[in-house]
Image: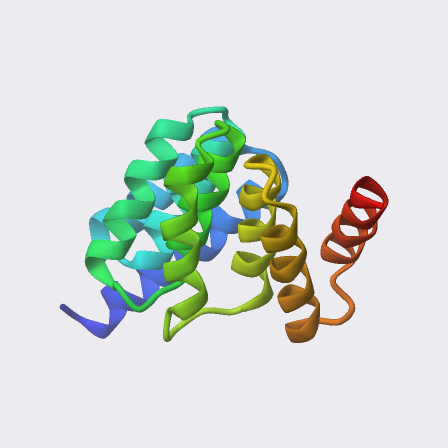
Length: 160
């Protein structure tokens, strides 16, 4: 594969991400697919999944994340995203192993997300001490992460 093709696929991926951030999901899907046709990457599959999620197409989002993992099993984002999508569907038991794998992935930033999402899964299962531990782990990694701070405060009010 030529360097020009790789560069063009990356440029299209960036355009897709921009369209996604602007809320133009149909255009983002089109651009991600175009990038993937040129050069399949874990990032493009993951972000395409994210776009499907915004469109309410959770099952397709999960499929794209699994494709990303096939390409790069060390990339943590798709594991975390699958876990988050399953939490939205209240499939907490299924979400937990994906989030654990995300927290252990070699290539993953921001590292606090899977800990926070694990906390959400345990909260859904009413396993409050496990949830609290996960929110605290997220805050150890990123002390300014306000969602984890709020979740921990809410949980403390709930159990006291």
